[in-house]
Image (cartoon, rainbow, N blue to C red):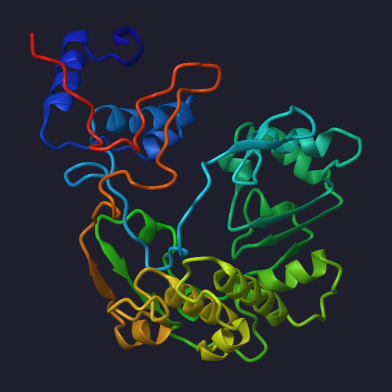
Length: 345
């Protein structure tokens, strides 16, 4: 290990013992591990350290916020990958996506399922993805490419159509991603500061229109139909779920209660109302889009805390060794979520 990382062995041993003995500690990593050669393994090992030292999902350790838009019940099934595999290299999917490292393979290799059209959104994979020069050549060979992007760059220069979204000041913002990783439960919505020019579609409408075109509905189809379809599925799922705060209610009646000037705001309103602090859940905060508009600087929803039932009592908090290993890891679901410490020598 010392030869690999350049850290003296005695320092590694000391750090490991201090981490294991500390009454509270957390191991954290982000961009550094994600961009390394073995980024997935490195990030996974960070979580392993927190689990094995009993510092996962407990005060003083690595914890998780309760996002205001968290779906009722949360994830009930273990995280799974490899439900299908890429056509050329047989790489497993993760979250329904394939590694971008195999995109050039899929464009260049003839046969059924060959990628001949591409949509990029606010990205520049020719610079950011592995083997950018090869992707550059592959993009030039596509039959059609559309980019939703305000910039002409190394990737979008290949696009047959570039659709620039409105300026940031003309776009509403709710930080779905980072509010799920915050160090305190918090929520805020920033509505557009400036109106759109007449006839100017929002970024959400641009994406909805592309969805309608890809589904065969044509460019003239109303993009609001996409929002209504998503809302209908969301509300029906919530109404049909046992234990949901709106279980058994009429989805049409729920839809009538929603407020918002755009489809994106209507969907945010539904997620807030259904969430753990939402108006429909009976929480004292009674969150909705209206609540956030009345509090433009945001709302503090309190400190992070383990879920009911104690630390790590989350349905998905189950850990196993990497594929191919037969021995399971210590389960993060087993209270008190801190394995016995070895006797000091």
